[in-house]
Image (cartoon, rainbow, N blue to C red; front, side, top):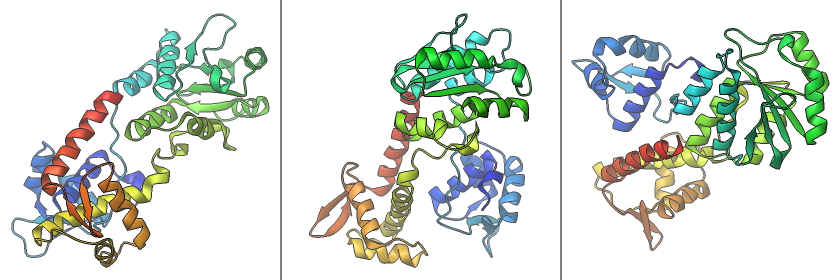
Length: 329
């Protein structure tokens, strides 16, 4: 699957089919998305052409099912108020202070509590003293910025006056040529606003450590940081997340089969039978995670059982996920 080519609606359709784990009609999928069947037809056709879903044979009306049960669609792009404000103010060239202030707020949200907006004459726009970072914010009504937007002697002075270890410029985009060459010579990193937005989206899912963000923005050999250069905040936990997700799906199937207790080895065999390449220790780690701190499972005599009805548990997890989104905005 080419993750870059999935639309937001296609991602939502995949999620619906994953959560129900059974074939659905056009109408059933549309209802779950608050759409009409006509409104999702193009997306269904596209997913079929990509080999992600297929029509279940012998069903009338037609029903759709996932070709791959272990598919993990990219996160749906949720635009928080702060991200929306960043995207709006980066184009407000008549009042660039708004972008500077919003960018400062973004760095605070990312865990840099001492991010401070200066922005006065002969001052950098933002400083983060704890990591010796100086940031200049640049707006443009349309397109990208070029070398005429940047006062390189001033940036050099900021580095010296504030003892900055890292110097960056955040803008909607950067023109090729002289600007990039000059920034490279000065040791200045060019950061697209969308890269900051991507950091915020990921951070809302699972918080980065500030040190990790500094490494992402300033620790690579790239002169320009785009949203494609931003790794998931869960990258070190990706396999655990994948195993937990597939385990929860198996538990739903266990309920249908009236299986109430199981061992780690039994679960491992089921997952391997689904074509998932996990080892026994990895599965045990996922079971421990579901036992504590989540209290979804309980362990007794080397076997596990659910603490409640799996459907109620998943419903509560959904509510908790929504609550977390709100407190992180």
